[in-house]
Structure formats: structure tokens, C-alpha cells
Amino acid sequence: MITNLLKWIGTTLTLAGAIATALALDPLNVYLFNMGAMTWFVAAIRMKEKSLIVVNGGLLLIYIFGILWRLV
Image (cartoon, rainbow, N blue to C red; front, side, top):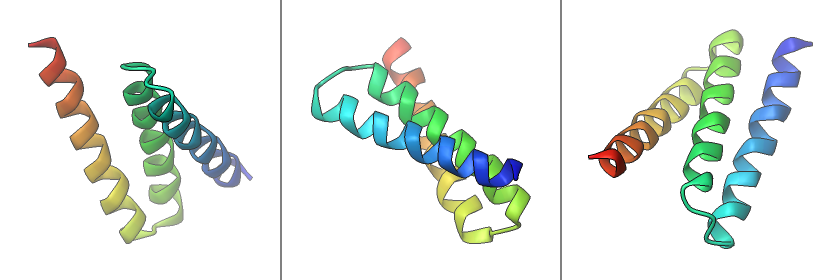
């Protein structure tokens, strides 16, 4: 039940990030993508789905690097 909810929240956040990118809402898009990846990462761990853990863990690292890059 909780995992299914996490998957839908992650999906919604990721789609919101894509919409924010299409509308050039920067840096909101980065934050939405980051929250979506984080939510999916937690769901993937709960499901023990290694491919989703790797892709969302990788996305988190990329997005965090992007946020830090903007701050420097």
C-alpha cells in the first residue's frame, strides 16, 4: 500500500518536473525532478528492484550535483 502510494507520488513529481522544464520554470524543475527521483528511489528499495534503485540513485546524484553546481 505505502509502496504503491510512493510510486504514484514519484510519478506525479517527475511529470510535474517535466512540465516545469517545458515551461522553463527553472530551478523549480530541478527540485521537482529531485523529489520524484528520491520518492522512486525509496519505492525501489522497498520493492528490492535493483534496476530502479540504480537509475533513481543515479538521477539523484546527477540532480544533486546540478543543484550544487548552481550554488557555486
